Length: 50
Image (cartoon, rainbow, N blue to C red):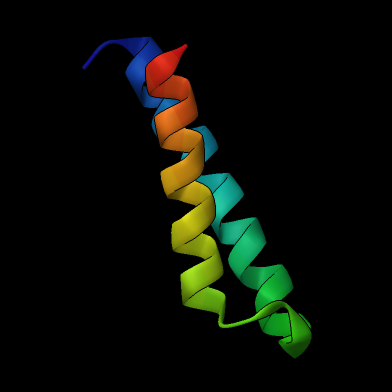
């Protein structure tokens, strides 16, 4: 695993955690796990294409 891959993992984990926390604090945003997983998946696909 090169440093770029590790950085991607850190960014994705932080973004997913932040999205899950926001969704947990505000119930109108949806289920925390679904939001966190969606954000991580979307960012992963965007980083993979770039």
